[in-house]
Image (cartoon, rainbow over all chains, first blue to last red; front, side):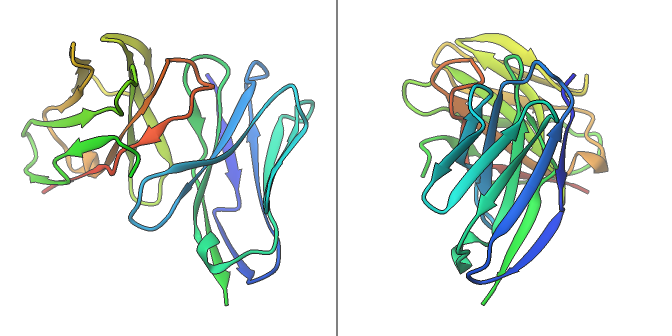
Length: 110
Length: 114
């Protein structure tokens, strides 16, 4: 089955700087990669996703890149703000179900 | 508020007991997913139902079972509970079954096994 690895497990970034979270996947058949954000004590919410027919997708301050050859994808957050502090999960899916990474706890330092 | 509801919010029980967690999907959503989130762990996919039928299975223990009823609500049954079953259990729903459909998560049920 699919195996998704996520790094780093924790990340501290100065407010205004950029943050990058990386994930690798094992199943070459995976073609859908969403990112979920989970604020403290709250439910995970989808923030951006990418399909394997594109290499990059942007939505305001967040972007996701995908390298199918290397089987890795990354989340980029620019101009970080305090409200970006949360746990971020990547996921990969090649069939019906998604396999989630173990999460990255992002802390924005004011 | 995602529109997905889960009850109860908290559950404290003893080892060896059995509990039932309930999930009501968003109106119109046919697919329900169950996830387990242990402390500092990711989201472990347990099982998915679509329109009443099991659609996909993940790392679900034999002691655990689930079902989706005709009104589309779902229940996750956990039996012979062990300390290691203590976790946050999320239910999510989506319109259809395919992975491209955004999953909307409920608030979770925090299970504590003493």
